[in-house]
Length: 281
Image: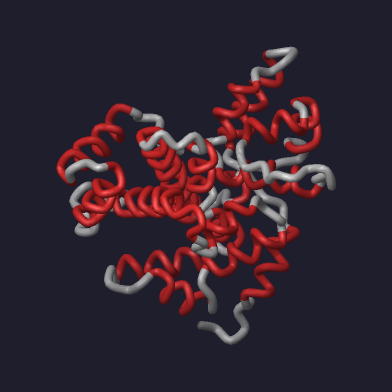
């Protein structure tokens, strides 16, 4: 690790005030809805935003910064945030001046690909988390989904703001699959990305449920387990359905859903085939 490399506090200060870019498709699709309809459909906007972790962070951060003293409960669902702000405020204030991740990483296709893979992994984890929550008849399925969607937002941000370091991490892990991710991150960055993310979430006053998950607070034990298993499956399946870690994932998911590991394997691989839009970038 270079001695002159920015430390965690430097990155926190940078990211805390940095502009957050969003996916190019988000700007395109939201802009089209705004132009085509006098009163854009809220559900249509929600469907677009919920496929973009960074856009979700922007929306929740904006809402938290303008939180009223009378607001007692955190808002983590996109639909609730839009209703509280109002669609005009969303279009004129939240969306104003946003730029795309593709423009920010223009000329660095490798870093852009790495960032898009991180987004894809997050959206896939969110899909699994929502599906399993519904199977378990948990009425907080949308909240659980959003927690999974935002679980790696700092990693996505670092692909934008520190592409060379993230490419170095990727290279080391590709050369040595046995290396633990957190150890490689500490070697290259000087800290774990999860630690950076937790502190950033606190500084932005993001919803407490999200912070509790990052702190591994098991107050909501089953819900935390859903999110963790969804993230694990999304990460391991990214390497292909022959990844050595998947049998253990199937076993743990089966224990959660009261299914056999073989049935879980058929279910999740079938989900991937039948929902071709899941995790697309």
